[in-house]
Amino acid sequence: MTSATAPFTDRELAAIRGEFPVLTRTVRDGKPLVYLDSGATSHKPVAVLDAERAFYEHHNAAVHRGAHQLAEEATDDFEAARETVAAFIGAPPHEVVFTKNATEAINLVAYAFSNAAPTDDPKDERFVLRPGDEILVTEMEHHANLVPWQELARRTGATLRWIPLGANGALDLSSLDDLLTERTKVFALAHVSNVLGTVNPVTELAARAHAVGALVVVDACQSVPHLPVDVASLGADFIAFSGHKMYGPMGVGVLWGRSELLEVMPPFLTGGSMIELVTMERSTWAPPPQKFEAGVPNAAQAVGLAAAVRWIERIGLERIQAHEARLVDALLAGLADRPWVRVVGPERGTPRGGAVAFVVDGVHAHDVGQVLDDAGVAVRVGHHCAWPLHRALGAAATTRASFAVHNTLDDVAALLAALDRVPVLFGLDVEQGPAAVELTHDEPATAGAS
Amino acid sequence: MDLYQELILEHSKRPHHAGLREPFDAEVHHINPTCGDEVTLRVDVTGEGEDAVVTDVSYRTQGCSISVASTSVLADEVIGHPVTEALETFAAMREMLTSRGKVVGDEEVIGDGVALAGVSKYPARVKCALLGWTAFTDALARAGVDISNRASVPATLPTSPQGVQS
Image (cartoon, rainbow over all chains, first blue to last red; front, side):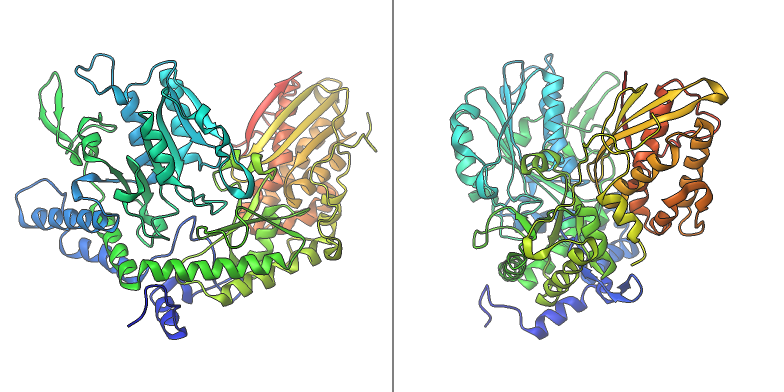
């Protein structure tokens, strides 16, 4: 019997890799693909591709509509997918809402707040924002968990506040008592940072938020695929995650919400499927989760996501987590040997997610990424949809490697070998560490015809 | 790899005509929102109509080697040249950069810009190379130069102009 965190044997890892068709292809003139961008989107194992295809081949019908057999089967498949995904996060099925992606899931909650119209009666005060109320976020948020709250503040007159980035990639919680107060109506934060890899203390922070009556919304995109998430123990009121970052199809995401909140929360998108009764004057809503799933839902993608969940469970999420932790540690060790590289985020040894972002001082991340790409190593470069975080880090852009279960120590070695071309190509003095290539030029004119 | 020609690396390490200078007719700030690269660019134009001359282009940039080098080449190629000629240079640069490797570029027209020909094979980097150039044409327009017939900025341009008229 294999223990829950036993390392994959070479044979097991080869078998896992064999389930991802894309890993057999080459890029950039015949180089094997080293895919280190699963934080942006993961590749999909055959089981997921087959499940989506099987839905279309055998059942395809609009779910929750029609009396014919295909419609019944499609509805059963869709609801079975909901049960599978719900069980994966320790939730009852009726607390899982299928959305397009995590961004839509967060917008769903943000718009529910502003859709609590002043004329609604009775309305749940927890979803009513007024000038003087506050929305709390953090400086390390992905734009998906920042911009919807900025917009909600703009629409309602509420004030947006944020917890600043502190040392070692962690939140600076020293002013939490000033930031999280009776005025705070909603607190939105990432479980795991998509750039730093930081694992935020969500359970502790959620308890603090609940003590002042705030609702807690967690961006779980970078946690659900990489570490066991149990909504009961996490303590949040809502979590959002995307299917495509967890070996599932694009076009499906999940909002989980406590059922008593979903019951009273106004809908975001309205239309077919989500109604109870419609007259020419007005409508009433179906019970959740249907209340939040307007239109013909993405049933094939939900079925694919359920297949991804079963696939993860077959491999073992704890083994995946342990495997990725070994890869992260190997990469951090390799980068520590290169004084011209600066890792952002928690130092080695701190528990962290599957992403490692770094800066090569003097060389723009775009150029670093291009050199890696030339060696077949696919990474993400830029601000990774976390522009304010990069300002706080003092970095215009970073290079990010992010892991999935199919990655190997050879992938880490390939990344490091390709990275070693950067100082050669860009003329860095690796003995002296950060080199003197200035990216911001402000010197007086040296030429010109003025 | 053929993307990083020595000439590009030289321009990116020591960009020509860098810095923000007076006088100027218009200043713009363009951003590449996908990677956060930024350029603040000023243009100074003397004369009117067909006689208009680009007397100065000054800039401050934060970006990758491709965007810095391309802006440096821009300054080399347009400062002291008639506006009409500068717009032709822009059109030639844009044609090369968006050609997916089919157009190598004419050194007589775009000077050191030919070293950026390899960029056109990397669609994700084309917007880096065009950042300074689109900022330049935007600045010309804000300075009152009619650029409509020669270098109209396509609607799909990836950069976000934040113009500051001075």
